[in-house]
Length: 117
Image (cartoon, rainbow, N blue to C red; front, side, top):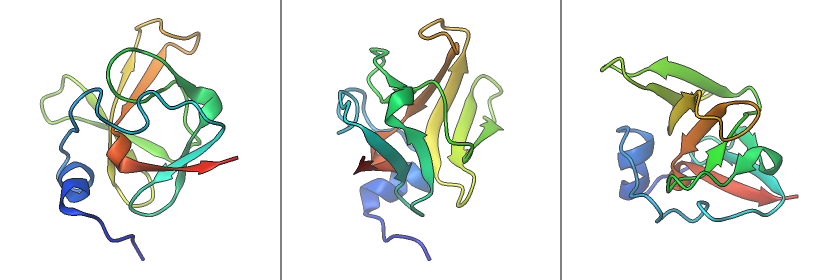
């Protein structure tokens, strides 16, 4: 059973849209806890893996193992989706040297929820 989504959430999560940069509620958000999929509640990211990248979307350098990578149709980027329900989360980039893990999951705030530790 999936959570009911608003039209704006469906546009991003189901139709692979993107929220505007610097507008998402979790962009400059650094509380302790866990970020889950808005559609199915699967735990995706821990707050300890979130970092400030300046890109305009929440950035994480690791996931819980519940994030699947899928090549974009254009072959230039790699999409990230919830491995449980396929919800579009954003894209993953490597080789930017923001953290020692050298990985940036660029996630739409609208695709996730937060549960405080």
